[in-house]
Amino acid sequence: EKSHFMVKEGIILGHKISKKGIEVDKAKIEVISKLPHPTTVKGIRSFLGHAGFYRRFIKDFLKIS
Image 1 (cartoon, rainbow, N blue to C red):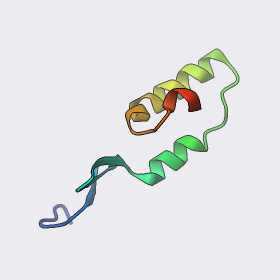
Image 2 (image 1 turned 120 degrees about the horizontal axis):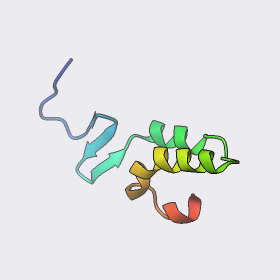
Image 3 (image 1 turned 90 degrees about the vertical axis):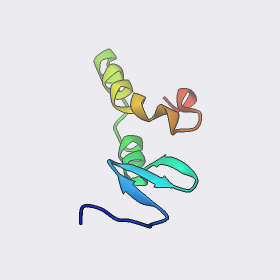
């Protein structure tokens, strides 16, 4: 189905929209947390590029990364 009306929450483009606001889908957070630790400068840049978008949704992102 393409659209749902009168629902309390839903997932749109990988974001969970609810009464609490916008959250990231838990599956996407799990994928990022299971990425291997980068060992090179290129790997670190790649990780930060992938995870950078989600930093506003992850508490203490700077400490974790």
